[in-house]
Image (cartoon, rainbow, N blue to C red):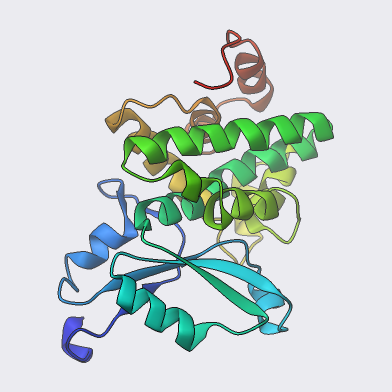
Length: 241
């Protein structure tokens, strides 16, 4: 509530996700309440446990107000916690949200022992989907090729420290989603972002087959093997479209 903040106090969003109701970005929802406060987005490849141990980490701080962004970077940055500034708040948020959905897909590939080639292909084509949606929504492709897009995607899709990838691994090994979720105290954000991402893709008329496949598996009960076969049977297309 803005009543508890000083006038014009910047607000930094560190959560990664999409608002399910209305399928909008977090910044859009927060701006409705804190419309007098500059918004910044902190995103990028970062496991909290490593940040807490002062292990080297590089993140993006996205802020449309350059002077506010520079002030925040100067205040928060340090040698082990490098912050890179951008004004692309849309791209920074989409990367952080969509990588969780794609990490579930990578986990499924790993759990089904489909090989490193398949995982690399999925990460790359997942980045293409992320970029298509981002550009359609006004983001820069360069942002999604940077820390908050590709960087976060690589981290989340290559380590079992990732809640989303580890959930996907268990799905790929045949465990029921309800059983996996019941045995966890942490939240795999990709479960909730998948349906909102599909709605965004529909709204902006963007093709996102991998994200749609994850949504079908975790929200509509689609059989994993059949869903994978459908993806592999898609017509071959030019890579740059």
